[in-house]
Image 1 (cartoon, one colour):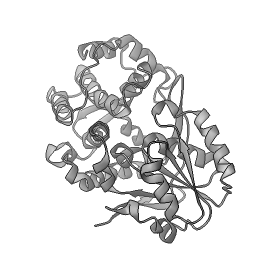
Image 2 (tube, one colour):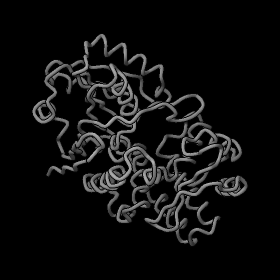
Image 3 (cartoon, helix red, strand yellow):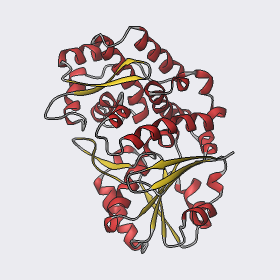
Length: 348
């Protein structure tokens, strides 16, 4: 059964369609979203033979464009490559980019779509649990710099997001776990039912995705440009982005976010913002989901130093998204460095 979640963006309204078998219905892209003109399906080298080629063959007047697989390729160099590919594919200002893949593809292809010819249409078709519940929704696109994650980007609302939960069944276990980090984050933010392990089985994927997506939609509709509460969606991410940078992305984003949720909960407790049962509950759900709860030797001082380029910090002042309780989050500024370091060392 199809689920359709409307999103009211600042200058438009689009739908997030969640439906099993949707990947096999490329004609819907033409009939519902008017993709009759030139289309570029952008995917990575791993997904191109699995889904990309078949999708292009079902679409009229479409070209397949591939980018390398992996977070290390989420760069301006890859965007430059995509620009050239879009020109060679003869995309004009009335054309559409279809981003087919996980968060790296969605963010990178989305940024290319936002800036190529000052912006062309964008359709997101996320293929990982993480991108389904998080990065494909809300219109944030961008790439990393050597100095930090997501430091170059734009707001680019898609014309549609098409989610096929059946694809989740083909994911390796690690990708399921990485996506669960963002699902649990949404549970901590606003929907405690997402913390229930009974909902975490792959056969519950459609309901899991629907609930998690709804949390994000509710937030981004209130704050599309991250001027206020949208920053709450970064719960755990100040820690996570620093860990990714320090490990040169050897830690996947989802694993880093999972640890970041626990670090944020422990920091909240250290600042007397919540009772000890909050970090205990967070650690329990992370354990059940198979996500990391210890740094395993990563240097706490190096992680803190990497936080200095975090976009959420302002004028050199730290800003963390912390918990007063489950579904009760708050932005906290000027957290003492010593307290952050102590929490990180306690989680070695």
